[in-house]
Image (cartoon, rainbow over all chains, first blue to last red; front, side):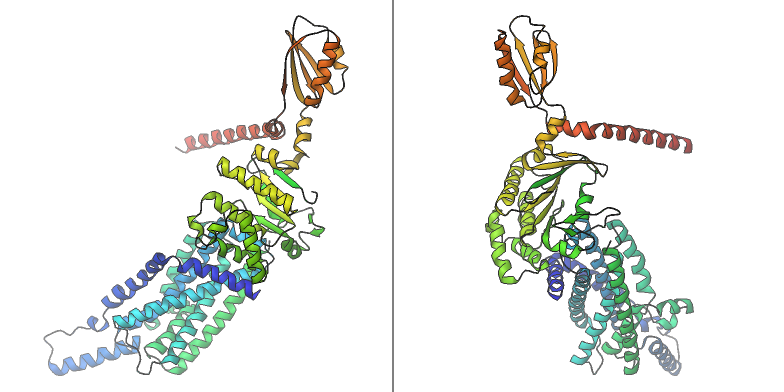
Length: 279
Length: 306
């Protein structure tokens, strides 16, 4: 079973990295997000000082607004703040694509060929989840490097261990999300449907989380929704690790919740996939 | 189905051919009934069945982004063939279907016929006992089709593989199949060897043109073996017989013994096309008329809404 899973994962990855052009394009979108949205949203700019203030008032005002920004965002730099969020969103996009490739494979008969072969259906499911994971990590690594060049401010103590932490968090998130998308895709027959469904869940998953904006300033109902979103915990942990806006205890808390999500969603996803495939 | 034969499943589009293959290859569970392959139940022993069958689906499932060899080796892994053995077998099957030279190229550079052959090769890598071919020559040109037929025949001869194929090409069924079944609306309507099926239509037609008027030979001709029906029509006879080739000498001998001179003889054999139409044709036409009715009703509804 392990050999088959590896072989199918490798197939997925070959199909991906041999389309160099497509990879470049999938990277452009997140770069636009961080480059355009991340850079244009200047936090200190919102509290620009009126020019006619007396100096002591101006100083107090600056002190006050600085405190507000820091308490809500944990950093003055929105670019760094939202780039961490985009890492998680990138994982979300990649997981979505893993679902689409399944619908393609059904459409083109490859899935039937797999189902007629003496292999476990778990291999089919796991190969999709693993290949999506590898793709996510490679893409995030590329965006991470570019983002550092664009001005991502790493926390003072950022080291190899933190980087390992980042990848573990992203792997857990990828596992949770692609399990769900893969399970969905095994029940969907047409491309139109999977694209519609993916678009439908993609937006709320992205916005009902702390990926772009902090939870603190959201209405309470949205905060409640975001608390059921694995992206929230992944982004929380990522920010703690990369820009160090929260303490280690908070990072560990997010991490544990994320482990629970990954275990729960993958069990659910694999069980649902099995039911969809063994008919 | 017998071991080692080529068995064809012939039917119009949507008759249930692919569904039958899906059930026999354990992809779909039958809603009722039972099927066995090599004595193994396709539902209860599905994993054992999967090990001894090969499937070449209707669609081209080989991966564009992979080379021919990579496609074959992936398939070998799916059937748990150790790498060393797989390499040897891959060379064998690629050689058999004449793709050895193209093995290292990406499949996206292949022609349609090459892809189909690669598809066949990957269905053979684990030496299946039964090979399922779903519409093996759908959409291929005449030459490629003939080449594929040749490969299929060689497989059946040299590898002693039992082959189950579906097709809606009459010619293909006739050329390839030892036996076949015609299926329509999910039910087998008739089965047998291509020859038997054609015989069921009532046999061949022999037409003889005679010199002079001989209107009273009907009873004599009816008395000959294998003659089923005789009709006189100006200057000659139209005779329905079971095996035309064998009946012609008998008829000619009979006529010459009576001193009747024969000017011309023709033999018309029923084609599988006619058999096919005989068993599925009328239903197809019925369906068309109901489509038309549905369309009329829909049009009437549209008018009402406006």
